[in-house]
View 1 (cartoon, rainbow, N blue to C red):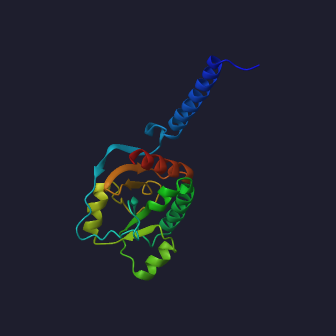
View 2: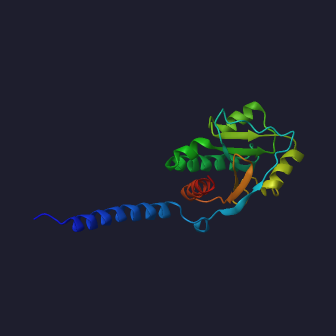
View 3: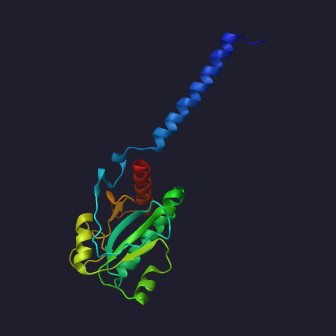
Length: 195
């Protein structure tokens, strides 16, 4: 038995409405509210001015680079272990390949490492930039970011938080040191929200 035109129209409208509803529910689920994140998100970003004498490496021609800033002493074993932890975070960002390709870990190295120490610390990780300079310049940038080093506890749990800065030099979030999967989800969600 053949359906009437009215019945066919109702079926077509039901199918289309389920597709549209599914699309919007999927978008809602993917764009979770920022309040559900463990990161401290700054609603409109805080503008950062890089000190004039401090050289921030370019990212090898990669456009619109996001940076995760943290402070470290490259001689400390805890800082090398922290770098290993961030390797897991970057690995977890594979779920966001476009973000993973544009994110750099920018380490403010207060110990002013030489080239050999720098190579040993970085260990061939192409997503790490080590930024050195005099203490006043590093303190100026660290103060703007809110991650001034405290005491001699380099890269401890309280010193391992990172600051997420956009290509426009706006500080968008404090990313707390926690499990790599949670940190990656925080970073991916915030960058998706901003862009």
